[in-house]
Image (cartoon, rainbow, N blue to C red; front, side, top):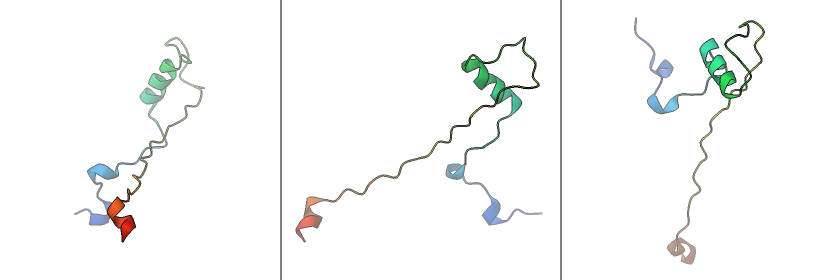
Length: 68
């Protein structure tokens, strides 16, 4: 069975996920120094997922365009 064109993921269109895997959560908590290896996995604190957004470039008007 083939995959529809609208469902294919392009390289530049990868969106940020809103759910982390357990390993990603533990790694991020260790960076924040909120999790030790001795702590229990159950009841871990929540981790905020930072969304990366690209800012659009402003169009620069040339001096020639202003004179017309």
